[in-house]
Length: 215
Image: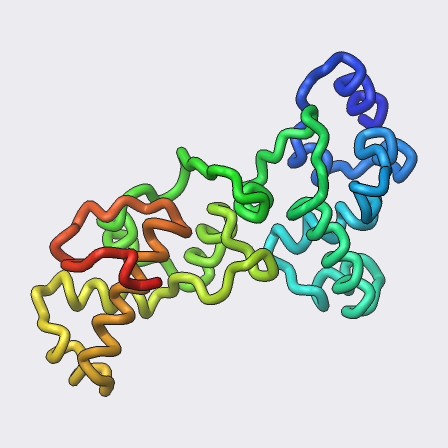
């Protein structure tokens, strides 16, 4: 596989970052794929790619450390180094960033063809917190890559309540919160659906306000 990557480079072919993450080549091969210069620090290493893959899969530093026999701090240092490389460092033209999270990190466009595409589909299936976490990761929303809280099952329940033609004040009484907090949470949910998850709001009456208001 290592020779395949070098052959692809020699032939001017695209090398998918997902392939490099799935089978990280040796440091020697990576040095040829990501030539070192003053503007390309830090180095891309095999261990760095292994850590990056685990983090992209949703593992935290402690979980990644257990898999790799490293301490949490060792993982954190190496993760921050390789994250900085993909966020700000030069990436060779022949490396294709097909990872949604890395594309987001780089400020590149992210498009989706799989998973939930419409809000009505989410409300139909009402996925669990774990399923929503996996969906968010698939869409490039990974902890440690600029993503904070993501959509959860309780958020969908709130939208269901709104779908039942309930007023914000009624929902607030049921939840024991202020009506303003219900409105702001609905605004936040709309923003996350559209901007983070790429989910079409096909039930517009649930959100009678602009997503931009969510900040």
